Image (cartoon, rainbow, N blue to C red; front, top):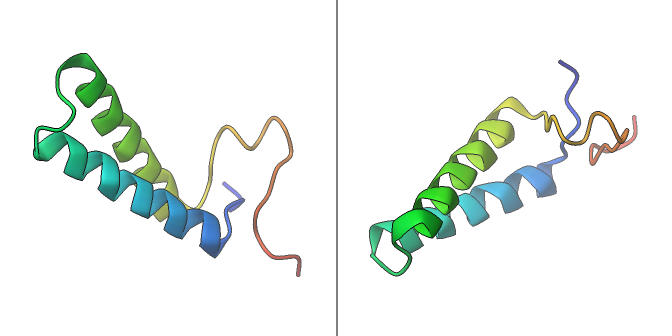
Length: 67
């Protein structure tokens, strides 16, 4: 897959995933909402490490710097 995420996008996703995890593991957010945030944070981490966001593909969005 072609990378379509720039550095800033990846860093923001990692920070948001860390916040979601902190909210869940400190007990601030619990129940179904907590599980959903935890899963969403996992998806953010996965897409950040891969460098490709599947939701960007159909819309032709790319946050990578132009070469």
